[in-house]
Image (tube, rainbow, N blue to C red; front, side, top):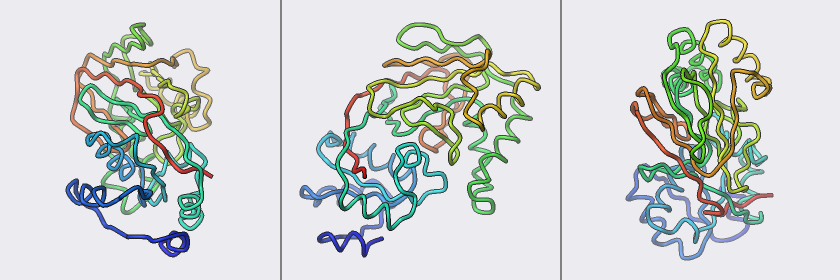
Length: 269
């Protein structure tokens, strides 16, 4: 990977574990491309720091997907092979993309989801080292047996979406979660809109049927699945975990996400 990048110009490899290390790298970037070698969480970390510094619109990023799921790269059609992805980062064309921002100032690069999906990801964390990408569906199975749903109110641009009892809510800038599960299959990260999918399938039989449809990308046609698009979504009600780009936070009773169109640039084929 580094050899491919070095073949196109001076390349500096920096290993980053915390914000101050990324800040030092950004301070000496001097107009060069920032290539993130990692998964959705690593890309989220870089975009968040650039947003916090007020520099997100000024820095062009490349992505070499090295994570477990690599959902954002999958949704964009970026190569998953590291050498091919490095070649795109070295020779690609910059594409302006949206970002979602929560009312806490946190960014969403790919997707935020609350409810069953977040619980499944939490259950999958301990399984990742042993099972790899298979950990997510196993975690989903554990969560589906345990969790019965939450009383939530979801509104998109002020209009209510879904019912009273929700199994999960997806807020997509990207299309997939969990290594390719198409929760928000119609999401497009450069259309200036966020995609919201609300799932009311809280009964045992309906949860099984929803899971089957979700794997095939056919869930939007179900009566207990509601889809909306807009510029802002609010999720309130029972305390529920939110998973943001693969990072699971604490339980929240109220969260709003809004889209910031054309906020950053990523190198594409």
